[in-house]
Length: 309
Length: 287
Image (cartoon, rainbow over the protein chains, first blue to last red):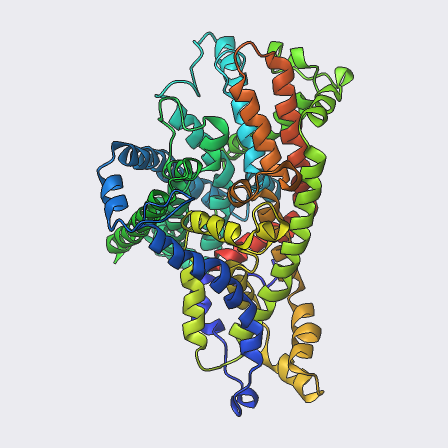
């Protein structure tokens, strides 16, 4: 761990840039030149398309021909469309299958990995993070093969122990959990590392003091560890909420949104507007999705805060 | 990482079992995919668990190379990784340096805007970006794959955190020696934060290499498709023609394609895993 790359979260205020007298004397253009490339790229390929999308969401444009202003029609269409709500519902179910499992399981693994007396720590860390670096599309393909109803590895194993096979990807009951499992497999290692960083920012003498005071290990976890990694948990919830509601590549490659639309997530439904050249509706859909994700992120951060403070 | 604490208990066998179980779950699918890709096609279906190195074959790889333009995909990905990665590696540390070590009017506002863009999901930009590309005549071009998102806010934020830890005295010493503003950055800051730069390099390479959503939208002709897009077309052909297909050979191709796509990033990861994990640890400062 190099000191240059690890700054504990709580020290952010201390590492804030200290003004140097030498540079305050005259107004220099240098820092503006240094930061300019980002804002140029953002203005061209971020801000401009954003304004464009807002405009587009009030038209009936299909990608060709005249765009006609239709006011809020795209928004009212979506908000009254069962398909739109179904896509959000699918994403919400995915969220429930993914986020709580990942936080609880990830925290358990991180607490164990933070123990300095654990052997093979480095090996465990590498094993956990390996899925995170594999390309999602490649693993999504592996999922198709592993979870096939007839010849897949998982059903093969189930039959070996005398259990019936399951239609993992072709039944509306199991398709969502199977995709959720892919997401969990891919990103839980990342969650563990984030939580580990939070845990390691907790000075060990805090625990020693608590142990001296006679606090039990369970009590130490609830009243010391958990509040101290709260920021990491909040960060994870926000990041994963964004990711789950935008989930696209997993259903796109593995199930194409099926069976019967049961894995058409918010992200995939949005993509379908593009293939249908329904660009005005698509733009409106993306803004509704972003609003929802923002609201959910804020809500989860709020809930997490009010419980402890 | 050196939190030696006497109050920490020695982990029990159950805890090792839990961690080892998780580790197997995480690593086994990767191992299974790579080893199965080397099996004769009928074996993949008939005996998914067994693997005998003796009967290893490159048959699936040959079939896959024959069916999809994976070589072109690779070259396109390499081109995008190199150019887009270079943009990130040049401009993000520089911007991070300005935010960390200069005080200038509008800095907080500019930084606030930067942080806000972090919250902007890619998906909201996909449709208008696509239209913008067609207005510019950039659909199916390399610049469409490279420029959008090339200098990203997260990398700047991360570099700012890293550079903030560099002592100001070091910079002042350089200034006394008569180094120019850029010279101080290039000759003093960059060498000091080399581990952070290496981690940024690994993370950037992986992100660009694995990127899928934008490439699949921005490019639809085979000659410009990146590796991940080529892979996804293979998967769609397969699931599209399920009925009556010879599962063994189809899966063999899928697994071969998946393995070959995984290999470069896995190797890079194994070589630089320390930097990479430390990089994520540092990035999590964001929370």
